[in-house]
Amino acid sequence: MLFDSSFRQELARYFWATLVVLTIIVITVWLIRTFGEASVGKFNPKDVGMVLGYTAIGNLHSLLTLSLYIAMVSTVSRMYTDSEMVIWQSSGQSVLSLLIPTFKFALPWLIAITALSLMAWPWSNMQIREMRERFEKRGDLERIKPGQFQESADGKRVFYIDNSSISQKNGNRIFIVSNENNIQSIVTAQSGLIEARDQNRFFILSNGQRIEIKPEKNEFKLIEFETHSSKIDSIPVQLSSANAQTTQPLGLLAEPTNVNLAELGWRIGMAIAAFNLVILAIAIPFINPRSGRSGSLIVTVISFFTYYNMVNMSRNWIGTGLISLPKMLITLHLPVFLMAISILYWRQQQGLIFTSPRKITSDKAVQA
Image (cartoon, rainbow, N blue to C red; front, side):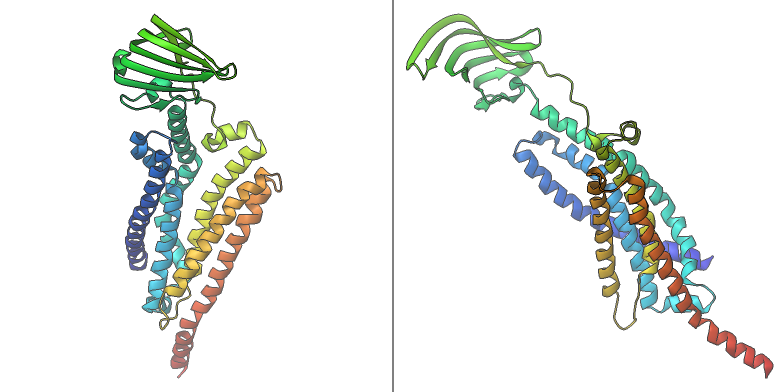
């Protein structure tokens, strides 16, 4: 059918153009933020690309929802601006006729948005969390960089290795300053070797000296040694369990706490919101051919971010116990659905104006 195919083709062009533009803008913002987090030591700077990729996957459902919404509003608005919708209505089509081609195009994307919000979001958060924890919990040995002073994870020791080979577990011209139990110590050595003992790792230092300073007693001790053991860190253990944002839906249902239900309600709400916005995108364009499409686009942006922020706020409401999950889903999303259907019905009644006069004229001509 011409009406069906032409509408979906134009909708696809607007959708891909909008998605590409939004992706470029959003990824640029995420890239700047990711570099900022890497610069303050939240994760390894070498992992910036991976963190950016996981962030994009986790938030792709929002980009798809907004792109789909803007594309539909732009397409319908263009049809009203160019009086194309009036022509279709006069030929027997109506606003409700847009629902079938719209959902033919939007259904695969709605399924993708649902899958991304329910499963891809926690998976990407888990990957980012593991990378951050791995970097934060990395051993003091991994923190050591040749030619640089590096602080240990607990902040009690400072290491310096002039020339080292971490892969061979040795180093040369080593300098260590530590402050533990109100005793400051300075250790220097010509060389060192890493050795694992139980759950700890030690530097076995050779040919050096150790200076111990006790500030409270105003005394110090100088010790020369041929071999000396200095603890570096504990062998890294398995990462901690994930929180609600990194837990899959079945895990949230297994422990139905307020926080878990709030997270689950937010994910389901994002999927329902995408469905409601598809209907709303057909209903809200109110274009006067003399005024252009700016008014409709402004309403589009405002309505999307208002609805999106309400979904985000619902997570806090459920998390604090102000409202239950079923009540939230009904209270927030059902009114939006009913409003969209009501506007569609109202616009359907307006569309009858374009067909009624022609029918009346035809009836009079037959009678004559």
